[in-house]
Image (cartoon, rainbow, N blue to C red):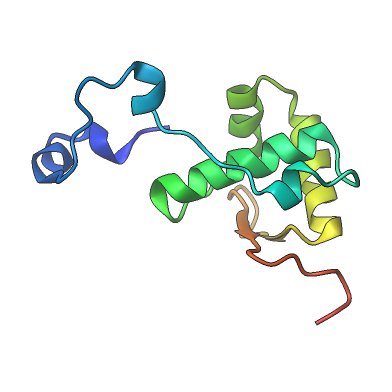
Length: 119
């Protein structure tokens, strides 16, 4: 994933510079909401995928990650990602908007969990 800060133009416009940070801190981190972390109804894989989607969202605000790319980045198979996304969608942590053949999906993460079938 190319970071916004990788371009020379963007670097010259930065108003916050990380100096003296170790590579892990400088690469950022993702917080997982406790309601997701502590939810016994979803699998560990679903929790990791939710965290991965959050990391994309916080990083660029709008991103369309492919399931294969997510699988590679977390060290899992594509089927694991597909099942985890379906699980998260079923319990209401996210909605998936399919954008068309050959295009990646758009994922909408909910601040407040919506139960399917309820408004």
